Image 1 (cartoon, rainbow, N blue to C red):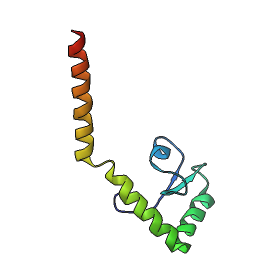
Image 2 (tube, rainbow, N blue to C red; image 1 turned 180 degrees about the vertical axis):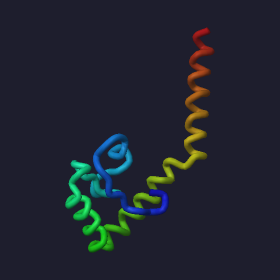
Image 3 (cartoon, rainbow, N blue to C red; image 1 turned 120 degrees about the vertical axis):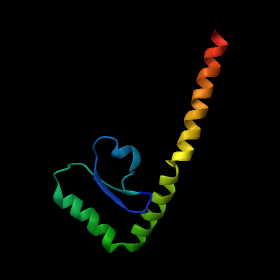
Image 4 (cartoon, rainbow, N blue to C red; image 1 turned 180 degrees about the horizontal axis):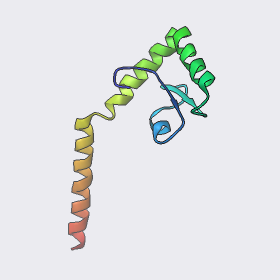
Length: 89
């Protein structure tokens, strides 16, 4: 994602949390449906504009998961929890 790659994956586990079908990749319902995977990949190879748009979206989305931003987010969460706990003690 951070490298701007389009994602073609099955709708399993946490993948649908990161991939919006048609927006930043393609999600395949059945992980055994090889023709669906091939069709999605073919669509990306044939439609260069779609591939470029997905690539840009993935680069931007990956920035949301930057380790520095995640650390700051957790620090703020911990500070809030500690502050709330201190107010109850």
